[in-house]
Amino acid sequence: MDGVFVFLLVLLLLAAAAGVLGAVLKLTLALVVSFVLTIVLLMWIGSWYARRRFRGFQRDLQTRADRQRRRGEAYDVGPDTHPPGLPDGR
Figure 1 (cartoon, rainbow, N blue to C red):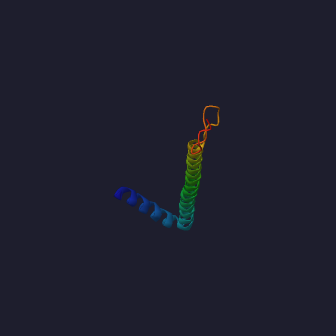
Figure 2 (cartoon, one colour):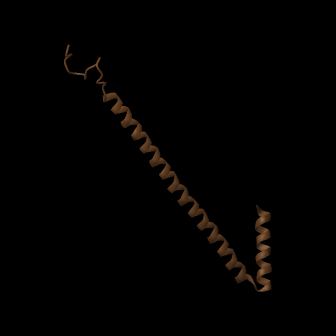
Figure 3 (tube, rainbow, N blue to C red):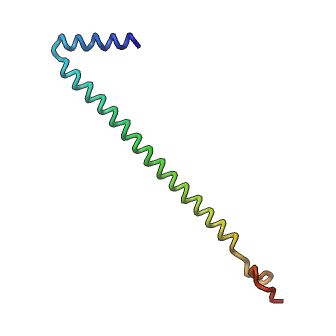
C-alpha cells in the first residue's frame, strides 16, 4: 500500500513540475465523480428491481392464499352431497 501512495505522490509531483497539475486534478475529479455516480445508479436500479420482485412475490403469495381459502370454503353441490351446515334432504 505504501508503494502505491509513493507512486501517486511522485506522479503528482511530476505533473506539478510540468505545469499540468490542474488538468490532472480535473481529470481525476471527473473520473471519481463518474465512478461514484455509477455506483449510486447501480444501487438505485438494484433496489428498485429487488422491491419489484418482492412485491410480485407478495402478490403471488396472497393469490395462492386466497385460492387456498376459496378451495377450503367451496363445497360440491353434486347429487351425492349437500352444503355444510344444512340438513340432509333425504
